[in-house]
Image 1 (cartoon, rainbow, N blue to C red):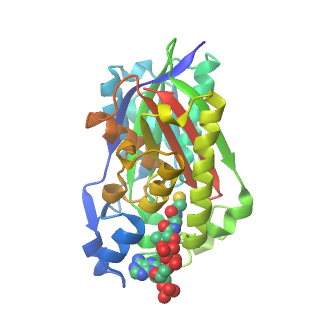
Image 2: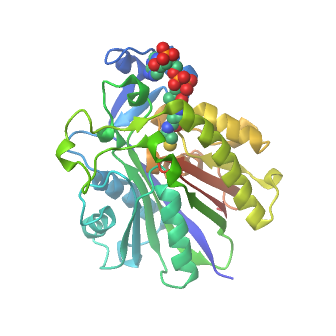
Image 3: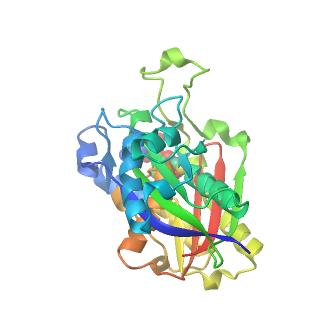
Amino acid sequence: MMYTRIAGTGRYLPEKILTNFDLEKMVDTSDEWIRTRTGVERRHQVRDDQTTSDMCVEAAKIAIEDAGIDVSDIDMVFVGTTSPDLVFPNAATLVQQRLGIPACPCIGMEAACTSFIYALTTADKFIKADETKCALVIGAECITKLVDWNDRNTCVLFGDGAGAVIVKPSDEPGIIATHLGADGQYKDLLYYPVGVSKDLHKAGTDEAAITMRGNEVFKVAVKTLGNVAAEVLRKAEIDQSELDWLIPHQANLRIIQATAKRLNLPMDKVILTVQDHGNTSAASVPMALDVGIRDGRIKPGQLLLMEAFGGGFTWGSILLRL
Ligand code: COA
């Protein structure tokens, strides 16, 4: 049996940090409200001239070095994002060219906050089909560029960043099971109203901003994240008590705590970055993975469950041994 193994990880966070106290000066909010409702204390924000592929390139360089490979070894690039630099070429193609990776399939995946889980799941299928020997998989987002900075309901939640992994085939697990899903009936609860073929003339106006019914998103997120964790464990016939780490999408501390509770996992088995990163959408899971590995908590051989939930709604989970 062929498995997909993570051979290296990296992350990039923009230099600029916005604390809750900075936001108090911008909208009618308080550090206390943001911390108690969301767990977020600070978040990073890109410069106006910085793009998603800029962040991807930085995160990827670190992952490539960590994996001990050369860019010429990479034969497939995936970038999961909802905030690509351009409509085309896709962000994966921009990254391929900028890193000097030889011409290869470059795939953009767009599934809001679940984009990285979609991308890594797809890379896993290509590896198992023997179509790639070394893939670069990135989740990255300039989500602060999609936020209305006068809307306290949303602007306090989000941050920017990029997380990257290098994956290779292996006889040893590896990714053990994956589960993806989406249901467009929830579209109106969380969406960005402007696109290329819809209301493009509104780009740059106040109407072009993330639109969210937070309370309703919260309830569906808690229910769905519990289910996607259970689903991937069921597929793998592995009991939740065997899990070493939960690496959840970092949208809200209370959502994460509710998911951990449903899995009977103590919070010291959960990698948390929401306090420092905010909700970085597609970047949140790969950045949390990188944080946990680099600070020495996540160790080779351990059993990890990664999961995410986002606009659509979309959702997904991956069970793997590092
Ligand atoms: N500062 C102060 N008050 C705020 C605020 C802020 N930043 N944002 C909203 N409020 C106010 C609201 O206006 C509302 O006031 P009202 O009662 O006078 O109308 C009050 O706080 C309560 O709002 P509510 O929406 O009920 O709060 P909540 O407990 O649901 O928390 C969220 C709001 C957004 C933090 C929470 O619903 C949430 O995290 N939802 C999920 C969002 C998410 O994860 N999205 C991404 C998914 S990938």
